[in-house]
Length: 170
Image (cartoon, rainbow, N blue to C red; front, side):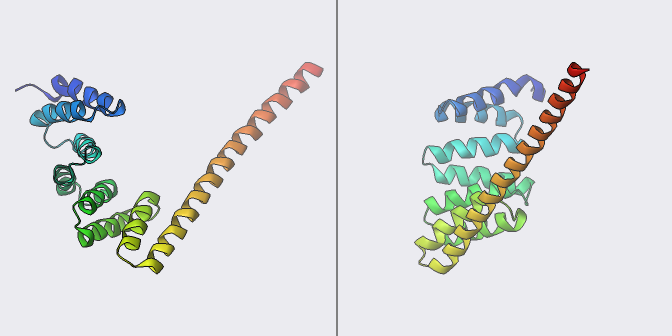
């Protein structure tokens, strides 16, 4: 066969097709790439996501499981496999995946939101409320972090302008 570089165009085309919501084409391109580079976890995650978008949860779960065989602590693969399993009505397994994703990445807001939805569906409302509170907390913290980062930039920008005005006034 050829080297990985010879097939990189298929991965790139798969990502571009996914971004354009052409999930069938995305799957075809990733599948071609994965025939030659079967251990590429990014392509497996991406193809699994395309399968999920096309309501093919069994195929999606299989790709996410392959990622987890290579990288057992991959929170994103755990979360996505949980979504696939929930679509298959495997609620307990989905819950286990969401729990594991949060355990691996305690600030993973999407996993909390998915778990909250599943818990509510399972009638475990109090637990769902707690997860929703965590989603709100993480969202507020992210907004504050963004605002603080922006304010740091603005403060530095104003210092530069002040320095320029001082130079101009000399």
